Length: 109
Figure (cartoon, rainbow, N blue to C red):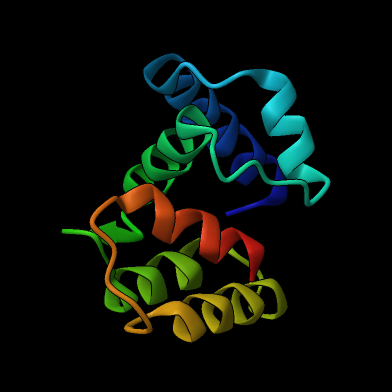
């Protein structure tokens, strides 16, 4: 998948999850700068939506098998290895009752 195709796919996911979560766009901008509000449930729901749409999380657990397949298909090897390493570092470390808590911890990695 080319970088342009990946950006378009992520734009589609972003727009779908924006509507579903009700997250404030300013919160997303702050997140992209590394600023997280742990009390922003809409932001957590947005991240849960994105992870779900990417099929990265299933039943509140990271699906490494699915991630490996997606990374191989969608990303250049160098970027893919960084993403895969982050998921592997988070997989199985904790159990969360709310999928979005898992997502914010991953995003920080």
